[in-house]
Image (tube, rainbow, N blue to C red; front, side, top):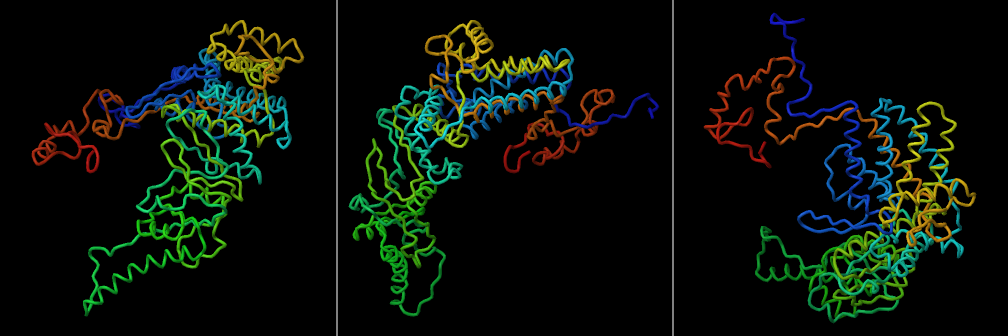
Length: 595
């Protein structure tokens, strides 16, 4: 019912300061935001891609890795954050293709933008995108060439996929050094079972040492970690063993004093000495049990004090405390040792072994290196380089290549790179679209055109005329039966058979890219309203629910304002208001106890 003054009662759903936008304009706004994000990483694609420098005030990162750049951009737009998610997902699943997946998703949205503006319902567009993506993924799987990785041809396949992953990286000129190292590391992990590949990050360690030449990087088929903090007596220790017995502990080997508030009642002053002797006896018993089990090397996650260091040194043992948890687990996995949480009852079955242990100097650092381990699963890559930024980017590049080789070992199939797959899939989608009636035909054709962004961007980044090369590629794929593997020839600015040229990628890489990009496009197209709540620490956002003109109230002030804020003024005089409007000269403190 309407009131006596002809006013409707206001219905307040959202608090003051909430930003809402909906409808077609909101959808187009989201697409525009995603296009702006894609422009930030567009030029990093391919072997001729440029690098981005991102500074956050504390450190500077130079990279052309799509996932790294997307993560460092700190994107605030709620819909555009979906692109960050798919890029990180691609990085975790496949390792490579993090830029491609963003470009594909945004290009799909760009091609669908005209349909949205013309009034086509988003659900119709989404349905046909889903259909087109499933056809595209199936076509990629049909195109994939299988390999037996246990044969020399399979070994070559792994080397070529690793080299292709490194092609667009900062260390592309050193792929002859890194590609065999990467393949060796991953193959040793899969020597027993492919299930071990799932723990690739934990089993293959990458250590960075600034200084020296990048060609001085090397692979340790075993475990290597930096020398830990050590006490006096460390330098006199034996630094090299053959077939040592290795004891791993999670025990502190330090003399522990009683706490300051400890109380001990004695009747005779001589009894105090027996208490001190008991404290020393505890540590000596621990050390004797470590020596008595026959160990030559003692590693502990917790500190090993100066007394223990000298004690072990005098008896010809090597020890290291404060070993990182990841390094200790890798040593346990490689040597067959079991980490002990107590020094009581240690027997020979919990000890590990390796062929050779030695402490070796690498640059300015000293490394403890275990080689010839019985369980040849773990590997350590030691990277050298002139600057921290170069080494950090090298590490990201190595990680991507490791993931690509891992994915190749699992899928055992590859496709050609250089945009060849995208063009072949686009041709297949156009042929499929001819059998679709109505709007669906246009939408599937638009999806096919979106796939051409990969070869087009490869050309643009290399400085070639993308229109000429794409025309030649379309003609080759359409008219020539053997043209399915033709892609962009970056070296000569022409087209070439990229499969014959050895530019290979795991088929899972392309399948995952197409599926993730299509899913992200569907998610963004399904959003018809965005509600952004005001920041909770903004005092003005929590006050009166009715702003000026809200709900037909004629711009009346909230109740707290209508009362003149009398209580607030009184509270302000006594130290400050805690609710409603603040008194004069009073503000909330952010943090503990603040608003």
